[in-house]
Image 1: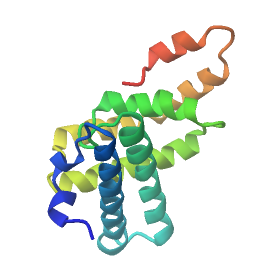
Image 2: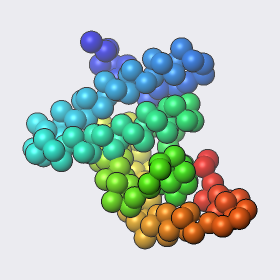
Image 3: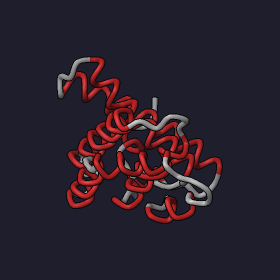
Image 4: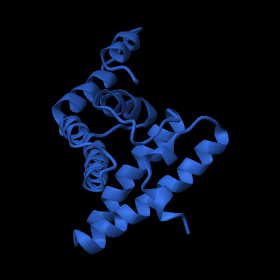
Length: 164
């Protein structure tokens, strides 16, 4: 069992080498289990809804924040989230879809609210993340524009919403 103190200490999620990355990935998986349990037992969500939120948060945190960026999951900014939803998610998926992306972003939003309630993230950052999680029209436009790219148009598409 993971040490509960480490689980709720943002500094424990710092990554400086491969060993840290593996440790943080495991620690994050444990935190996601606590988050899922909170959704089920405290927030009383039905299992499918709780699972969908946890799965969305898991994809963002472990595949993007830890694996892609090798950064602390609490060193999140609105611009980094925008780069995920408006670029990385679209490029990394064979058939990017706004419905799927909206589910992921709902999980991200729920996770960071959970963290804010536990004083792991400040309220201002949480509100900024919520804004970016709800910006579905922008992300739909990015998906549509991605499929409309012709010739060397990828560079300008990529520059409009960079992965940061």
